[in-house]
Image (cartoon, rainbow, N blue to C red; front, side, top):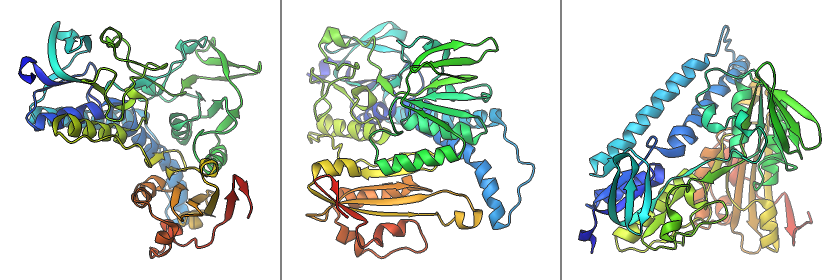
Length: 464
């Protein structure tokens, strides 16, 4: 049957998930083609995680220079040049994109620098080549795009995170609409580079879905860094001002102004013009491709991974999903995707690292929950004098002793979360943490030196 097709696998989308599946399947000797209309690397490499973290590093140097004085260093005459950062970032992204292409080519995958769409159950039209090919299996890995809120009057006057990586100069002032990963990260980036920033969000606290202590501590820290946070408000309209700035009308009738406005209210799956409807691939209300635990769509030989499925929009998750597809489809080893206990980081300032259940979720799912919490000033700030708090929090099922969640905010929180996630994934108990020797002096030692709970929750109510 496979011999009657041009390819064993055709991948639409050259992001982390699509490239991984294509490269590994090709390395197994399968006939693989991959189509990407933009640049290889997807959101993460080109316009997401990687350039964002480079920007985070850049934005932290002003505070580093200030903090250095407490350690006897004086850094005078320091200045920042935005074009230099952009040029160096672009060079690094180009290097990474080249590695993605090289990996595909080295394993024998055929690359189409073109948009592709489904025109039949096994048929893909490669638009740039005006050519239709056939494939036994088709993998859709087209990712997502920023929500531009097209129903909002004046949305076309705003930028998204995509454009933020390519600005010719820093804005004189900035309003960010949203309070998730992207919003709080870019608020920290631009504020750190000296831009006055206002964050507007419809909810009553930032980072909805995260542990409430994390969001509260971050919210306080952001305000101390000069970021204005306006909660409980919607954008009603954006208009241009005579001087080229932006005037934002809020739903309560009040107004704020800035040179630039960024929309950061989430992302939407890239499923437009893929031909999904005509081949019977079911989608959800946001356009996401509905898949089973093996990433198979309603048409079993058409699969999907990554942000286009709107399951868990993280790069390592897309890569894991892709590897499961290869195991299932090409190694005769059915491997369902495991989305449980996925660690994540928010490169806010201060940084957040977290794995497992937040306290408020654990309190709903378990009858008795013990919470261990330590708040302290990071050691690096004992001499710098910076007023910044670090917190380490462990959420435990009191009945079994199993660690349900670990939540950290402070320097290198993401690194700590990645390490501790191994233990949490393995089902470690609080007793396992307790009998682990501390590494001193480190912030991470708090994970293994909190022997008594800070308080207990019984059926959601705090009792101690």
